[in-house]
Image (cartoon, rainbow, N blue to C red; front, side, top):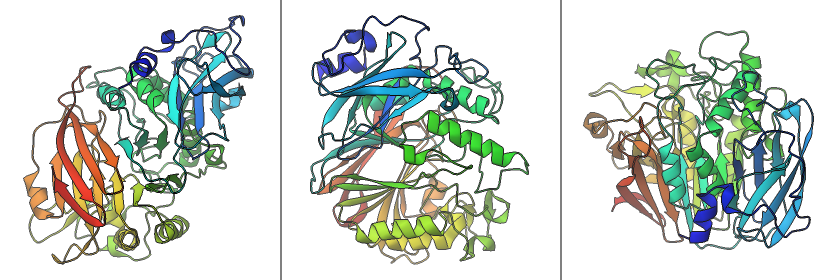
Length: 507
């Protein structure tokens, strides 16, 4: 830990003076025309070896029903600074972005020409107000190995619990954070919720903007965003449950407009590059982010290009449709991109950041087999193709969210042959809050049915990883409760994967 860093990140903007030395310095005397517009915090993401995305969104009234956050219908200039120190005495980049009404007054800045593998601090000023300070970093240069601490998370339902796990994640001081989907949920408030969910079920652009804004008011989530750069990909609830390509969960002639609105709000509220800005109801989200020569992150989109779920969705026994070789969860173009990237990679570790369960998971005891049709089990040929591609990498690792439980498993070319070789490992994170506190059930029946699955835990939390040239260590972090705030965190289990040996070793 670094005391001065903690005072900035954990103490908020008050820990930083209002004046700074820089070119240009942020004016401290600008007239205050609005209430504090930085209620949603700051974030950074998609680091490269010479750049990163800096994000904020202006919203003095974040829960305004029209989704505009209490902002006037005009363009607002927003000054930004990037510094080599947390007190901003060494400003290395500065400029002005423009928060526009048509983009919900969000700001995405992409400073370039930065030093590889370097920690930076950033902040914004608008209408005489200073934002909280964020910490970020660039990726190491190509050829660099070193080490990386990365945490990944999924599934944060605002109403079903408090976001304490995000705070505990921030306290682990990761270099990088991956969010693998269900960043927000579309549902209206439920009687069982422990926190009030604002607005109706999200269908319009105003609805999605309001929902994202409510999530961003959470101080624990703000802290996690301010601690490290994020790589994000959506799953289903950023739009609606179990959507697949152009197919909604239930027939809905308004689904194309709903999906376009959800994509627009997703971009506005997360630190994504301009290349991800949605157009015509489509969004380019799959991408590759290199962390020196240590890790290649292949961030996947398993929603936008998939075929509809087989056999009517849900968990199905002996569903023959899932075996159809024409069915894909990635689409042909993304599959080619991924296989090419795995085949040509020179990284020590190749990591798939993706959404739904990858390894086979037979949920039915006995001779019959029952699988979730929303997972890769519902797209068997697609899964087998990618598994073979993972086998061409030096070390393949699949990171997964979605299922609100911790799991750890080994990816094989065939699950029907006990002697089939492993080609990768899979680490599945539980939810931040979704489904509430959880329990101490062991799920022994499913583990017995799937000997390649090595660990299960039904508590909320996240996964902390440490990549080095010789091994990957994964710690499954859990909280005893989330329906009230402030829970402690502990490690429920730890695993090590050795270089070139795709096996999980319990530690």
